[in-house]
Amino acid sequence: MPEQTKPILSVKNMSVQFPSLSGVVSAVRNLSFEVGREKVGIIGESGSGKSTTGRAIMRLQPATARVVADEMRFEDVDLLTASEAEMRAIRGSRISMILQDPKYSLNPVMTVGEQIAETVILHERLGRKAARERTLAMLERVNIRDPQRVFNLYPHEVSGGMGQRIMISMMLISSPSLIIADEPTSALDVTVRQQVLSILDDLISERNIGLIFISHDLNLVKSFCDRVIIMYAGRIVETIDASKLDQATHPYTRGLLEALPSLDHPRDRLEVLKRQASWAEA
Amino acid sequence: MRQARLHKAYVLWLSLIANPLAFAGFLVVVGLVLVATFAPLLANHDPILQDLTMALKPPSAVNWFGTDEFGRDVYSRLVYGARTTLYISVLVTVIVAPIGFAIGATAGYLGGWVDVVLMRITDIFLSFPSLVLALAFSAALGPGIENAVIAIALTVWPPIARLARAETLTFRAADFVVAAELQGAGMGRILFRHIVPLCAPSIIIRLTLNMSSVILTAAGLGFLGLGAQPPMPEWGAMAASGRQYLLDAWWLTTVPGIAILLVSLAFNLLGDGLRDIMDPRNA
Image (tube, rainbow over all chains, first blue to last red; front, side):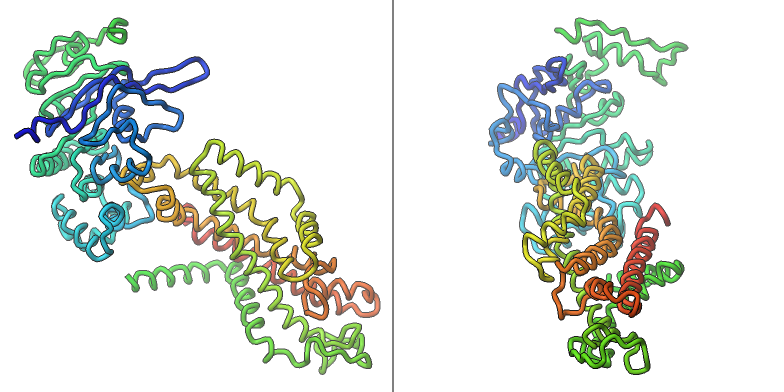
């Protein structure tokens, strides 16, 4: 099927620059990657430009930032030239983003049901009743028992894991073809994490859509994603199949892997990552 | 859903009763509304009927608060004056709340040069003492109660806009606003669906606290002859006209003065109480 092979998102030579008093600072430099109907992990340390990349794809970078690229194409839309109104029509309905912490990403004075329904009211012009039906079905889909009750709850009345499932249903209700998940599980504890991830995994394989999974958890990305992009200081240092992550060749990736404790090969002393200035330059 | 709202109102009512000062303020405000509504029933004389043979009579069984220099009954004028006071303060509030919110929230949400322009305009308004500004506006617009309302509204909106901006700024970068943007919501939708409900309590409180200064400004304008025009009963104007007879007829200034004091105090107490009740941080 040609549909399968054609990438959903292709980015060529994207840079995100922040002009400042002491010159232009580039948070992301010359990034090129493609995302098809697969799960792509973006991994890197704090400040390596992972989240900035996600926001730049949605064109929600801070007002001071400048995004330049040779090409940024999402399906049939050129993200570089799309107007703000066109972007609004895309956000939420065709590209969605799951944020880190449901405690902050849900409006405290709106019921969760209203917030989920807003997407379909906005993009599909559904009536209140139809939107409510859709929301209840979606809540059920993310394994929330008793969706009728949860619909009328406020965000402070739900648990963290439930909140993240609500966030997922809010972002998936209008069947987008690309999802950007910006550290969706880092605010959750380990047991809830697996549960939320398996729901996300089900939804993505069921609908055959693309996922960009931003994280700094190597093991998680290795087991969850198909392909991994490793970023350092705003650049891609290596792109590798998740299953072959152990055979990574780049010294930075090797350094990251060696800094991880492992149950299979216990060591008294873990390696310390030795940075080289050339990684940021190359 | 309706039951939940009723319960919420009931809880609000309980916490209002638990705060005696706020409750007292609430009672006076309710009293003011009732007096204004039933003025024709409560007044025992025509408030604008002149009878020079009855001029400057001290309080008695017939004229409860005495009569003024034209022989008009002060009690009846006071009762009808409640209408004017309520009219001005409610109208000013209704005008000011949306203007202040729209300007403040737009400035806070958009930031950049929009913020700078809008906030410098509010700064210009804030740099004048509000009474002087209201005086200037009502003098320019001409005396009369509608013009007084416009003049007062023009001086009251800047603090509301400031407050709305500050509140908007605290939520501007919040993740749930970003989440709404990610859903594809536009600026209007985010402002009205997400930010208004969050700013509403503090703005309502601020407006209630403002009521007393609106009443005082209205009285001040009336006192200077720029607000309500004779023979319309208005508390400030009543106090002003009684000033000439202060030594012979104390009741002319004292009675409307006390009314102004009571009502503005009541609004202040109610506003203070509302802050304690509606602000979840004080719960």
